[in-house]
Image (tube, rainbow, N blue to C red; front, side):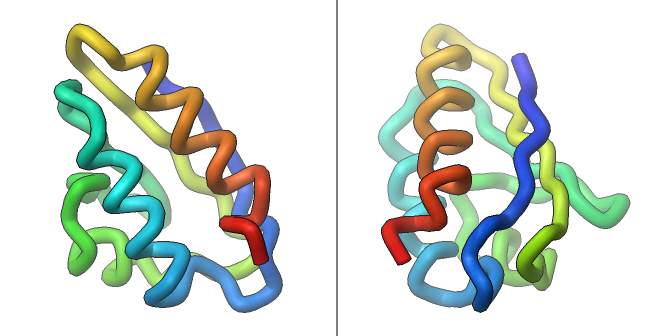
Length: 86
């Protein structure tokens, strides 16, 4: 399962929201990946997420495979769409 979402917060996916994203992804048993700018990274890796250098307006695809894939994608998309509470 996968879903495309855009970064909403003005400062992009910097350290604090990236940490929140990785922490949320780690709550799920499914394999979770982020596809952006032609790269695919493990959503449970802070270095992977930070390496994407995502800014406001950039699109990313959240992709999950496994027993709780729908919940994983929904939770991560909600986090991004909510601007990480910023």
